[in-house]
Amino acid sequence: MRTWDGIAWLREAREFESDYCVTFAKGLRPLELLTRMGCDPTTAAPMGFVDATEAYFDTGVEVIRAGVSHGWAFAVENTGARGFDPDVQAAVSVGTEAVVVYSDVNPVAHFVHARNGEVTCGFAAATPECRFGTDPNLLLPHMIAAGLLSPGGDPPADDDTSPRGCELRMSERAFGLDLPYDLVVHGLLTAAALREGLSEPLSVDTAPARETPGPGPGAV
Image (cartoon, rainbow, N blue to C red; front, side, top):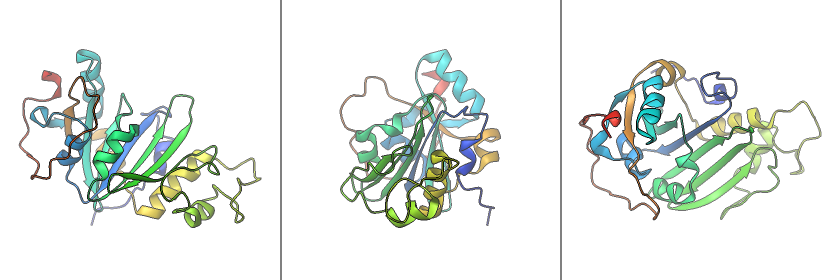
């Protein structure tokens, strides 16, 4: 079996410059995850990290790349945060569970877990005591173990603790999430372009996803 990189490396990855959005969905195939996120499957094609970024600047349409590792499909966004949209989280998690880790340019890190179309637990890493969702205490033991919270459920008093690092470590340990660095940064992943004009919640097609690459996102 391939080695396990985890996801904590996102915190220091110069390729993302502290700005990333990665969506994980258990048991899905890469193209199915992309389709649920609102990508057009007819544009699917293998694409590298740099090419996906350039495709966005060439067309103005975001391209999302996806793969699979250790039972979870993952979708990496170079130029957007589609996975942080609550409607997308609902669509991605229908019939399964999903995890989204997102850091904006400030940088403020966020975590969201969803299951069967509903957000169960979410929080900003800087304020882990302020959680939302149908089961906000779902990950409380994992949050304490990772250093996000003290044993009493309050933020830790240690000023040297990095909330972003703790949030990512908690995510990888609680769910066994893995993001293979070499494949994501240097390899080819299935990529597809977002459909334009998306505003309504996505409908989930339960039919098998089409895995045959089309002309590629750059052709949008």
